[in-house]
Length: 172
Image 1 (cartoon, rainbow, N blue to C red):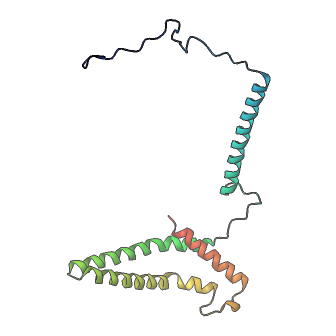
Image 2: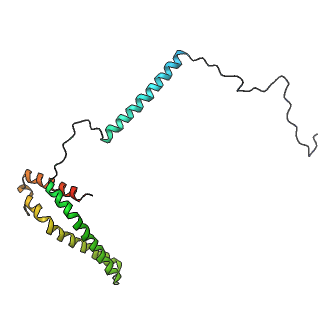
Image 3: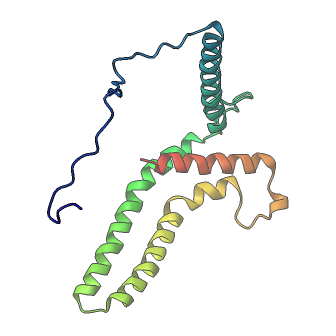
């Protein structure tokens, strides 16, 4: 019977078993022709699939369209100039609207009422600015009050080009 506080001794190993070092015995697996062919096929498959995925992604993104490239949409240069001249006026009007709202809040008006007043003031200022600067040129393309069946395809195309011109002129 072992003593109660004695430390157990390690189990004894038979003398015939020696520890084996894994690093001491290199693995010698023969590399045959089939292994080389399999590795080449695997590399080829990965390369082909990788390139295929890249080509698919580029085509799907639209950067390289498959068909002919459509011509650029027509832009009326006169309306580009109008847009460029209109942009600072529009920005100044917007800034005046913000200043007016700040003055109203400073004067004690509740913020909710000032914001509602801002929205109405901005709509009024923007409409007045449009009437003073852009309504005439747009009315020259399509008369005011014309119905859709009265608008010719040429008028429609000119109006679209004018809208694109304004967008280009207003863009920074």
